[in-house]
Length: 192
Image (cartoon, rainbow, N blue to C red):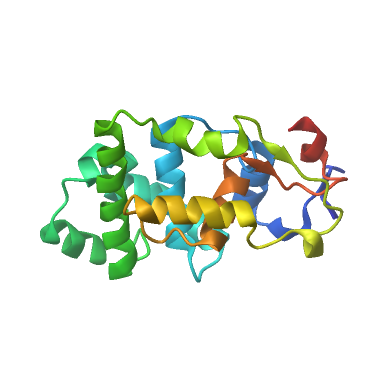
């Protein structure tokens, strides 16, 4: 737990970066149900693999610019020339595998939509439509992955998604409010 200048106790992981502070206070753990927004968040969490969330958060605008607003239908049509264009864009993580993963995941999202499957409904069914409300008292108690994140990871991989391992999926679940992992004592825990 960390108390900031405004006197509010917050989760200790966010540090003092103003963008991280705003993200923690306004976005992290807030339930997101829109399938397009969930897809965009999944792409950003996949880009984080091996990096800090702070790095991705500071590049988030670059992702929206470079990937056509993170519109899965547009990204699904990207080809090798787009991969090379993105590899030269300093506003994003220029890892070829992560770029290709975003395109692959867009195609998987479109395939689900063509089957009549709403991505938001698909994901929220794993938690029966309601956030899991954890009551962790410290960061040490919060798992990096769970049995549920392993199940969701397998389901996404079966649908041809990539960069969706159980640890990435659990971080995604936290970010989009499928689980409330604000520690007890953080002012956001009871709000969510």
